[in-house]
Image (cartoon, rainbow, N blue to C red; front, side, top):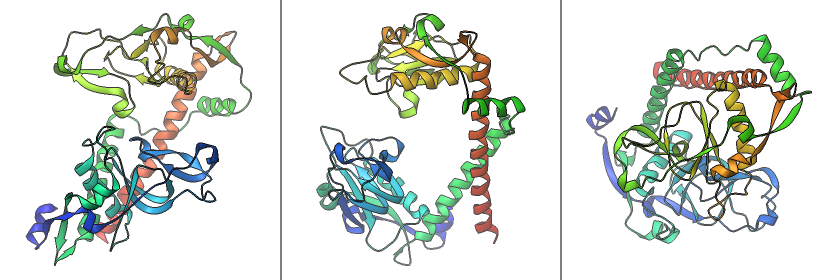
Length: 367
C-alpha cells in the first residue's frame, strides 16, 4: 500500500507535534469525589488504555472531560479514546487543529505518537505538556497534494485490521476453537453458577502443596533463548524475556502470583524470578485451574500487596479461596465445565467481532 501511495504522488513529511495538535492536560480530582458511574477516567497507567475505572464525574467541577481524543501520559504512552472520558493530571490530551478523528485516523496517529514518545520517559524524566507544545518533536505524516492524506491513514488501518482478522480466523480454525456451541452440561453449569451453589473456603497449601518462590536472574545475566521468564507486572502477562540460562523450569498448567498479588495461568513451561510465587496446580484439569486462578487473583489482588508489602510464596501458602464444593471437596468437574463454557462464550464474541471486521473491510474494498 505504501508503494502505491508514493507512486501516486504521495509523500511522508516530518511535522512538529506542537504545530498540528491542540494540547491540553487533565486535572486532579480527590478520590473522595469519585463515585462509581458511567464516565471512564484516564490515568497515567500504561495498561487498559489508561482507564482506572468509571465514575460520576460530570458534576465534579474540577474534572476535565474530553471526547474523541488521544492521550499521551507522562511516560510517553499514547492511547486513542473515541468515547467521552475525564482525564487525570499528568495525562496530556491531543486533538488535531484541523481534523476530527474517526477511529481509523485516531488509531493511526496514536501509533505514530506512541512510537515517538513511548519508553523514552520515566518518573525521573517526565513528558510535560509544555515539552509537547514547545520542543522539536516530529512525527512523519502522509501527504498528498500538499494536504495530510487522512484517506491513506484510513485505508492503511482498515487493511491492517483485515490482515489481523484473517490471521485470527486462521488461528481459530487451526486451534480447533471454532466450536462455540455450549453443551447441555455447560448450559446447566452456567445456570447453576448464577443460582444456588455450595461454596467452601479452601487453603491453597492444603490443595496444591507449598508454593515455590522463583530465583533472581539479573537482566544483565540473562542469555537470549526460548524459555519464557516471568517477572512481576501486567505487560506481556509478566514475561520480561525469553532466556537460555540454566534455571528451574516450572511445569505448564500452573499458576503464578507476583509481588503485587496478581495471579496468572501458565499453559507453558517457564522460569520465574524471586518476585514470583508458583502454585503447583498441574494435576488439575486446565479449565478448572483457570477457575481457581480467578479465585486466587480475587483474594490476593485486593490491594493489600504493593512495593512496600510484597506477596511471597509463604503468602500463597496462607491464602484461602472460595471454590464450589461437593461432599466437602473442591468440585473440579463443575469448575472445568464453567471454564469451558466461559471460554466458548468469549470465543463466540471474538468470532463475531472478527466477522464484522472482515465484512466491513470487504464492503469498502468491493463496493
